[in-house]
Image (cartoon, rainbow, N blue to C red):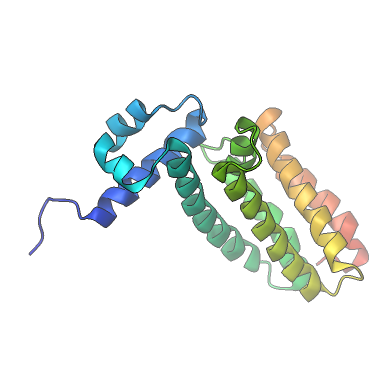
Length: 192
């Protein structure tokens, strides 16, 4: 029998989805608990039963975003087929993302930029996201057979984060195409 009452998992999902959406759109500092309560419809008492602080709530919302974003990014990149094609397809994925109406840059760079304390759980989640992205790129550069897969993965990470930043700060939605051109140069004559 189905009821209109949310299960605890539904409530937590709604809370995390709302928190993620609000902080991505407006920033951590600009998003107060009152706004999270109002938009999510989850009572403050319920929120604090799950999370001791706003930072813990934001960190968990970012963890969920990391899982979803990485799954999407990997799925899109794998469409490149060959090892070189997959590396270049990372920029096709970015281009797709840059043209979405709610694009606000990298949630993890944005979050890390707002939090001064490197031991804060939000910074830890932001760093973990970049480590996971690097590890995926390292997997691709090894498949590609790069002479120095670690260096090439790091260069791709720099290109990806640079393209994201340029797309946001300069409002240049074509930054992924430009990043892809630079990536081709890194791959040399083995590109695609």
